[in-house]
Length: 319
Image (cartoon, rainbow, N blue to C red):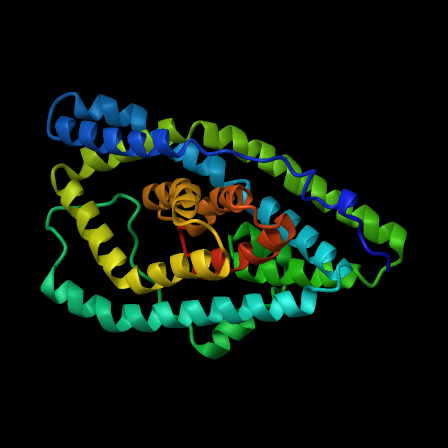
């Protein structure tokens, strides 16, 4: 197997995407405020009839690209990293960071969140149309059995992203054992798939201020004045529980990553705005990739590392 030269890396060939972070944040605030002002008034239903489908279409436009984007980025990242003889070390380091942070945040949330909810209960009168009853938490044996799909197409159709990512990872590692010609053809195919999805995502994210405005307006109209309190309650509790992890992340970026605090904050703002407005880790993945580029992170590293925590932290129904 021959190594990929820097010139042949997907780093320079996958299109860059930009997120209008300030406009998106403004759209979220304006949508919430307008929705609160319209709540309970005759104009609320006509406004909701327009805003609800606009917000849903924008979010669906972002989510529809996630599966092919993750497949293309992960395949390309693994192939190029293996070619650079760094896959083993990066895989172990990435897995260790993901497991460590998820375990830490889960323990912190399990201990701190019930205490905070007892002290500061959620505001009454808030309803969300998309809300569903949480399903049963699977046991360890069920979780391990779900990692390998019996039919990857069915798993993808059911939005079971974790087994799909396991399959794509195994497929990518298996392709590195092929002869140069078929291996390069597969790498080119998945690189083109990821590049095309990044173009589509770029188009969708240009409309982020409109989409987020519509989502905020719908939330404000449906929940009335309690929406602002619910959003503030959600933000305060989650930020309180995640403060330690957030501070650690910023410290690592500044100390170990040698990035300036202001540059890191500015690069992460669009991803955080999309996360707040969509509450979807996978929907935030494209903006995290854009933030990685702004921070100068190697594209191969981002493509290899970012999909895994996004998939692990995705919740059923809000992937």
